[in-house]
Image (cartoon, rainbow over all chains, first blue to last red; front, side, top):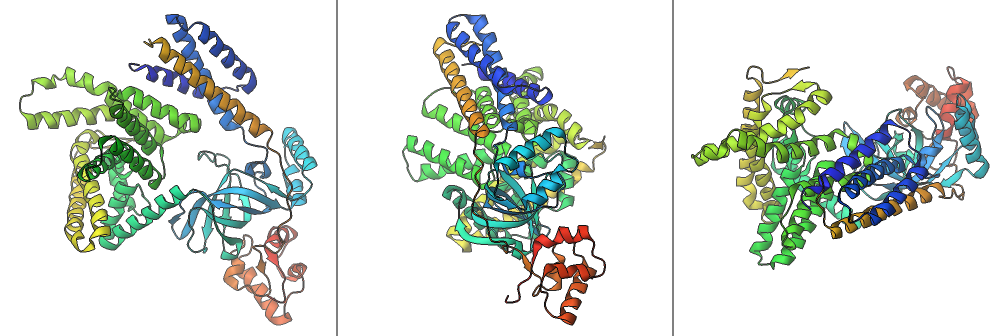
Length: 488
Length: 112
């Protein structure tokens, strides 16, 4: 299947964009798709007609996926919430991610299970200014539901103050207002709740959620504790971002300078980190003399575990899926195809959540890799790199070409979203990326040594400190070059 | 264009069919999820006791500022414990809208 999945994925994405722009009815389109599958089954031996129908199948499937993601269950928490209401809700459920502490408040995603509110008050407020269709929907809702406590589902975003330590899976009852910001776009979350005191948060002292994720978050906390304990605050913040993707402690001035040089991608976990984890895990299992086939499965387990530790963002899921398919390719002794792996990763993410197509992180992650795959070989032959005889020079020029390919692919997106144009990125990546690799390796080694033999972690601590100073120095030098960057 | 073998085509068709089936089932489940009425939670759950709350706790309620919290505490100290939430209406500066906004966060409990 040479590069075939790439075209199907493009048609799938076009279907998603079509549904985003135009109103699509679910069932008629569903029936058309079903009819197309049957037609395809009859045309399986026809070349061109089958291919055209397959593209159409991909297109309609993408459209249906997005349409389905717009539909929420009848008992979804958002169905009980009206824009700008003062109704007080009691909501029971559990914390569905690792709580993030920033500026003295905790934010987390809360999976609703039961919901209680003052029906009369809600009804009165919701009807004020509601459109005819909304009023009809509410009338149906309240006619069916007599009591004021219902089963519910769906996620809400919660901001809490003065509530003490919270953890993933903790079962809680929350009391407060829930509102729906007009354009909240965060996956499937449509509502926000603010908790301002400890009495509005009742702990049920039970734990829900998966054991696997709980273990991953527990390990993440321990690793973060090692960074905070052993490194200076500045170095800890940067190493934490590079190894675990945790950016909340990064100083704004550091973050801003990385944006200017176009190297902010090293502060998020991406394929680069996943590659390092796969390499380190492979090496470790090889030293333990674990058989080759079993080693592959253990590496896959490590990658999935790391994906959960870092919060399963789009770049990590992409890299993990690509990594898994690459490893499976070796396992099955098949030649790995990078385009198909990338397409499969995109399909995997988009089938689960088609709205990801419109997120910046998804776009940048996939466009940069696609640009490297497509442009790098062309640039290589254009500049005739094979004629360079000096090996050291060849490595540097090749690095330049990879960096240039990624930059060419992403510069339009970066200019559109961040209003900045940074020609220095091509040069910066050549120096910054190797440094970031060393910092990530050194950081991970420090964690492993600190957990096994804390006394020996000293040299790793010093290495990390020096590398971070060099990284910031180089970055600062580059952004001060003439025409390094310009705001649009 | 695509260069697929017949077996690969069959596999792709099968996968598309499975995905489509899954989408249909998911759509139906969403449409027909029942809304169940459950037993009522206690009215007191998570609410702040007007007779024991300090100024900071009162101020954590949306709609109660520093001055209003101070007036609540002064009234409690001067007249003794509240016997009902309606007594808040006697405090200077409270409107009907404001009372409606804060009353759901408060309870009156003389034992607690």
